[in-house]
Image (tube, rainbow, N blue to C red):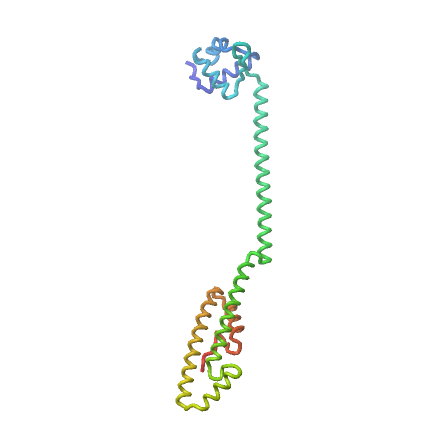
Length: 232
């Protein structure tokens, strides 16, 4: 008993038969010839022909009142050439896309490297820090001036001289009380300065060089290693 043919095997036999005939066939002709060729029933011929037509393995053309079917070797070659052309086009498009992507990546990488070298990306952050530093320095200057004015003899000009004249005329006890008050005020303003120092540390993200540079610039002669000189 011959081996049972699969559906694919039967389709291959039908296509081979049409190519070997070298001519066109009507459905009625195929219903007579294909059962013996492909080992199928005549009622299955239309189903097989339709499947092969849908897969473009055989061609069909309506001539007159009926359809004619054929499959020439040249048709398969042309179909393969078209398919090969489509594949080549898709491959070329993929290569071009890859090239474009690589060029875009290289351009972007170069741009970012230039920005990193020139510091453009951090410019806005630096400007913001500079503005904050200027505000902080102005606040520290005001506190220094107020602290100096609060200390004995710390006022400027005529106000200071008038204060000294007034002190000379007062008793020792009263002078000591006023000095204690002045010292308390100075300590209070010093505490305020320490609060500003803590704010500076947050702005500078703990960078000691930046913090010490601002302290030296703002405290002047009152600066010692690590911060503001303690009151004696």
